[in-house]
Amino acid sequence: MRHLTPLVPLALLIAACGGPAETTPVATSDFEVKLTPVVTETEWPWGLAFLPNGDLLFTEKEGGLKFVAGGEGTPSSVTGLPEAFIEGQAGYLGLVLDPDFETNRMVYISYSKGDGDANAAAVIKGRLSDDSSALENVEEIFWADARDTAYHYGSRLQFANDGTLFVSLGEGFSFMKDAQDPMNTHGTIVRINTDGSIPADNPFADGEAGAPAVWSYGHRNVQGLYYDAATGTLYETEHGPKGGDELNLVTPGTNYGWPEITYGVNYDGTIITNKTEAEGMAQPLTYWVPSIAPSGLVMLTSDVYPGWKGDLFTGGMNGPAGLELTRIDMENGEVVGKQSLFDGEYPIRDVVQGPDGHLYVATKDFDGIFRVDIAEAEAE
Image 1 (tube, rainbow, N blue to C red):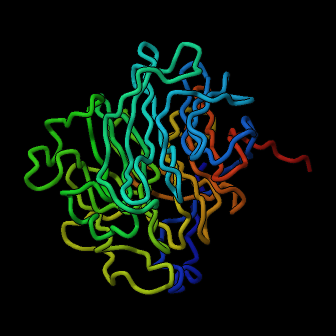
Image 2: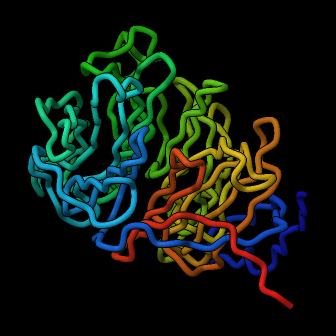
Image 3: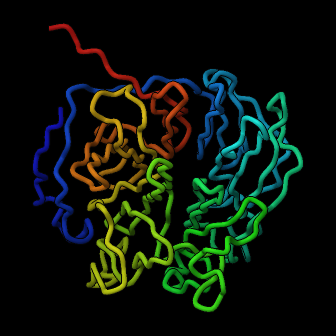
């Protein structure tokens, strides 16, 4: 059963929190959830990917790739990765399994490559060895345009039904104006083939109006990316500045507005722009004021949690409204409610659905990886 309560906007209208309050109703559920630890020996876990048999791979920002047999217990290191540029928000980041992993065991990883003067997100692929101890025959298939900052990497990966790969790329913070220029990859989502070539039906494939790899642009820092295979729909969550985090439905060639339009302000409270919408620029499905710093994104396709099938889930890492797992109540492709599941207790970096149908989350810093379980009601 769904319960919707209007948001009380007064506190959200404070200028220091960002732009105008988002008025999506608050959604509630008939049950509560809890976090059950499954992997406790982690440092800065960043991306999660379950193997079909229930084993778990995850990246650590500074530690590379880790493997957990059975998806629970002590992780072991996976060798074979190239050395990453590790500084600020840079390091080992997103990962995804090949759609044909069961037959080819291919894994794709995004990481920060370069040095302080010139660095960017790169994507590699490699075969996970039969004993899951190493990546074999590692190849680089993409390297974004370089910048001289270790911030705003984006770097989530998702496969489409046609086998092409989406890669989210942050605008590097100090390169925010470049997000409005699709001729570069700052603040974009790109789409490539698994050999690194460019799909012929990309919106700028001819290179005349944009870089051939670019799928969409005008993004700030996309740290949540999810492809709904049932409908062929790509969703993303991205960080705003102070306020103005967004959930977007991503379509080819579309400009998502940053920094020409935003529902946020600078971190010091000064105005970036007075515009929250403009012709030719897409509006988010929903946004957050104050910020939650959304990271990770998944749609629940199982029946484990009553009434939640088809809803989106994103982590919240920071900000006045962060440290949570947010349920985004979806109906017919529209957001009809949002629910904060942990009330500011846990900073969550990634969220995925496991083969058992449960949601699993990685906390932002050193806490670990957890399964989301339904909490039993306390006896009266």
